[in-house]
Image 1 (tube, rainbow, N blue to C red):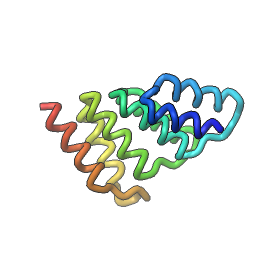
Image 2: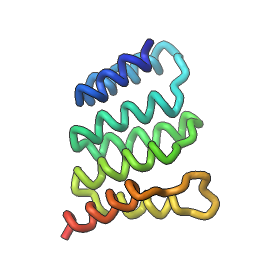
Image 3: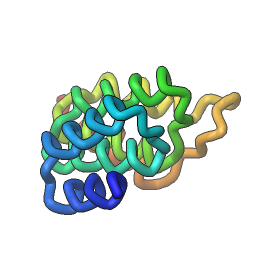
Length: 120
């Protein structure tokens, strides 16, 4: 399945291939869920591709796929690794929003703190 291929790309840190597979899914009108997006975002995170992780989060919301804790942790971590501490803090605020169904955890906070530390 496409999901298995993207998960394999994540484990192998093949972010470009994961993006290509996700694109193929969309071209073929195959519905993507949060698991597929999270695996693609995690592949980007492993390769310090914060900008792509942010784009995927945005696209996920446009596609009416609800981001979850895993999503926000991976995107915040990608921002941290990509030196985008401001974006990491913005996402932490979104994840902590009282109206949000996403609850932050220690990984989320640590990634945001690390992003700020690296940002100076």
